[in-house]
Length: 431
Image (tube, rainbow, N blue to C red):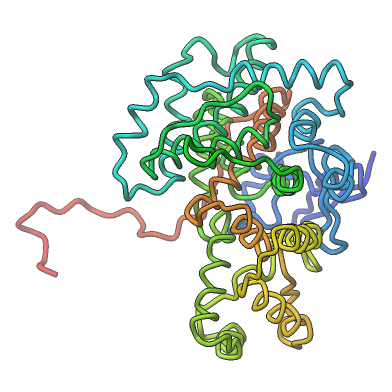
């Protein structure tokens, strides 16, 4: 018998099996806890609860490690492309040349969006947030491609996944162009995935977009760094909704909605807003630091700290280096970068931030990189969503194939009234 954990309830002792992961992490298997004890566990926020076994992403928050399918994210950011990394996450291995060519051809073949969908884009209110539009449009894809669902054959699932990867990028660019009142730019077969997106965003009949390999590389790195991050809020939403065996589009739509939140995907946008506020205050960051240290103040220093990482986010180091490279190449002086650097220097020396493990995370520099690439602020979270798409797809696929699959159905501890008598209207007291 393997390692077990003992739980004592009253005069009874129960033994529960211990599961050991491939990196040595341990989990107490409470699958049968309620059946044998009548008890459940209580874990608000699920910070101590493992909802699944996964072979996709490994992260160690104490050591600052992030790996996709065992490969360090640092290596992928330096050597890989977003398309190759997407193949790795979804299929479990790096593609051969032939596999990568087939994957790239599929992405190209499915890059166009049905012309009828443009009517949806144009009928959204101009004030609609791009994330709300994207979530709705992804869900709408099911109506345009109704033959595929979660029970389709393997080849159909491949088409479904590549279609989503390709079309979401196109839909994001279309929504931007329409919001600007500009002519929609169609994808080109001669451009790579990232280059195509930049061209669809910024090309125009009066000012053709000049492709720059360094900007394409920067976008590749940005999306690689966001491609997956274990069981975060949006990924958990995809798995939870997917556990009802809904189609892929509906599950991804749920992930996009979860990512929309300011404490998740919206954090990079919030960082820019915070830096703008500091800049508007004359660059004096001390009042902001003082508020961040005040336990009674709900203010948070955006871009610092992480739910899992208790050291420097490995993605932040890569993002910081890329920001400097891009700004130097474009010869841009961004005052927000100056403030960001000073803020990082002060925070890393500050006892409060050190004691509370508040190190810069990936969002801290991501917004500045997107600004340099010309991405409007309200599109920042959409950029995050495109990057996270291969992770969501791979997590959905893994859950679909899991032999231990169960419909997600968390329990609760009820703290409301006990059985209560119904009162007729005349018996009720006025409040």
